[in-house]
Image 1 (cartoon, rainbow, N blue to C red):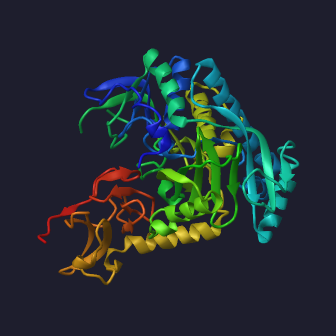
Image 2: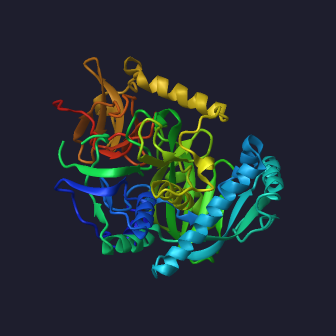
Image 3: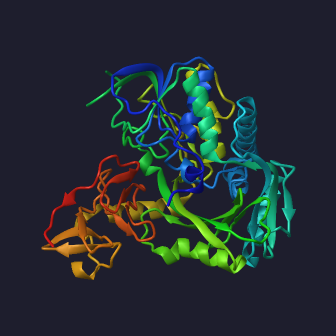
Length: 490
């Protein structure tokens, strides 16, 4: 099912598919919020700018977010203070607060009707064992955000034990916001080509080519493997969202729990959006472990509720919890990257856009060193790094694929599994009519073994988060090729 944001507007106008060689000062790859925002600022500074996207505008992560605009990124400030110092943490906070103001100013300047609302944002716990984490975060915030407050009450329909509120944060409809920015870009000569897959970037001048002095990779997770090696520094996480209608009064502000399972709450028009049930992309999951958790929570809190929407999203997670922004690699001048938003892309996209635009236009940003993409620091999150390495190693070993000890005829309708057919490991999806569809369950990015996601009916990569539909068509980066299809006779 489409996300509420995508259903709320008609398809955003573009220049259609790229069908000729062309050139520009800057080529932005990716028409999500980071790519569109960057192009908007470049156009304002007079740069001839082209945007390419394999899909429609905003149909990646941007169209499936919870769309909270906040500098309160979970319990980030105690972590940053402990690892890098208070000054570093304060600058991270200031960068994101500036992003909130930038977004609000852009909306006012362009009269964009995108349901922008100033809201307070809460991080909270209902569990006794997590109170100390809240206290640690609050202690660090005394030196970073002096307006943050520790609270023990909320407007949620249940009791919280402890929380922290950031005042004057915001929420909006991200697709309506993009529509406003796109209008500005197109009216001033910018070009946005959709359904136009970029497969390679070379320093020299295959189908149609775009020649540009600068290239910005804004694809959420970079599809280029080398020399950046970002696949070794990030993984992808999936999470799920439902939109409910209820006759009960809805909470006015935005909320996120730090407990497991965690839950996110925000309103959108007459809907309450409940998110959470997250896991590393590629983990084997079903409905009860994903949407089912959210549905159960919704019925518990609002027994009369109607579920009107459900969708999933994914995010690139960096091992040190900080986005990568700036030069793609020291070996590739004039190429830039913005990735690893760690589930906070609405504010991070604006931070990163301004850093990259400053670099392209010859300026400098006071926040550049915080997010530097070519940084070399010891990996501080050793447990996550170890787990990612183990998952990737296991998934790269094709001869270790284990069939699920079921026969082809045992696969349930509208479900999938990996089975053994004459000594070959095969991914099978059985549609609702009983017809079988066979694929080679190996990711076309780096050869990792795929897992069947029974909640979304997709084939997911546990290494780097690529995703394919049930028939093997590639739908999410970093892979760009479809799966190999087998033609077995049933």
